[in-house]
Image (tube, rainbow, N blue to C red; front, side):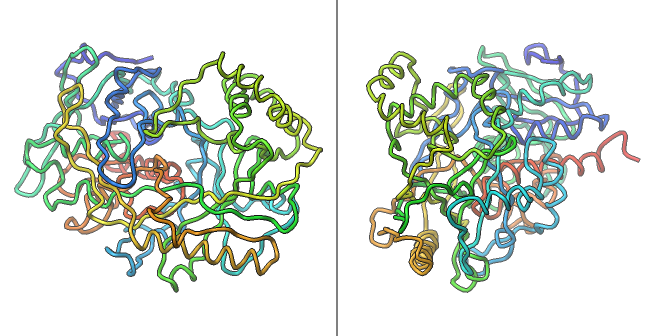
Length: 558
């Protein structure tokens, strides 16, 4: 295992490719390059386990409506794949097309068809292949339950995750057995040194690195790739000022602009006309090593006609024990007993229906986004106190043949945000423990963002009434302030992809327009966000980038 200490790096050691970040993007890229003959290093700010001292570097100054959570990024080998649920979906056609009704019309410089081969190859990294989104198994799940929702305006958006979800750090740890690949842990890049190649083009010479003990070094490479996540990729460019006081690649003031997220939150209810006993397709399921659920969005022709965005909503069923703290603690205990949980799941030969949203959701967080500490003693005390509700949950969970009648579902909303230049990341006056300016994020929803979700609620309400499924309660139009404002840990935009250097930062191949040897592989390159969880697309882009590097730089190329 070639794990290196930055304090022992030798100044004459020149890598072909330096990948900064070991999350899903960085490790996918590295794995794809393993047989290229390239000499590669991966720089990871964290360690193999969470380090509280290093985690202080995740701090963000929030000055906008959408607050970035502390827990939305991880400084650890494997990055956010150490805590995610793995839910994946490809982008939709409309997400990548030109939409002139956006405040600042934006589109991807590549088509969805260009990404499809890379989505397919992403199945090597724990993602579903595209066929799974229209598979026979999924059709069977759709036909299971009390009703099938058919609508000419509402269309389905399927989200699927491997169960258990991939931890990239663990699954791809063996790549560092390769003699051409070095891994540096506790290696925080503080900036990139650069030199002018010509009047318009800059070249990176070194990544300047420090560790938690204060050791520093300058790592040399021919090619550098920022795979540090959407926010940190932007921040590193702004911190690197040797050849441009505004930051690398920022000649036209585009770096940090057009930030997006997927604001989420519960708002609205559907009260069924007849109680529902089974609806796994819309409520959530576990089946043959995969879990998932289906959301509802407006079809793309209707979106274009109404000039709105691609938001979606999903059903969150209200069980008799929903929101009970004893049940939540019971589920958290089971999640921590991973071997027992996986054993139980492997025993399930039939479709398993969701019995509480926390079965697939994240751990609870406080108002700042910090995950709440789990206390075993308090958990057990709470379970005992709430034993009737806990017992009811366990009975329906372990004996699924006994149906539970569901009368109401909460509506869980996920918004697409339009890209706007005023939504941006800049450097604040406050410093982190390394003396570097903390990122300041100003992220706010727009009238179009609001109108798009309001229209989805309106159509959904009409469709549920027309089809006699139930009555929808929603006051989204009247509610002030805007209630859907929790970030989804999806940090998009800031170094967006495009053909024109005046309106974008990276080109089709993810290379910064004005830097000859610097690439970015993170959600920051998204020109628009759509509504899908972005990691599937980010890893598809990492595979695409690997092909580009092998074709243009590999010593083994033909």
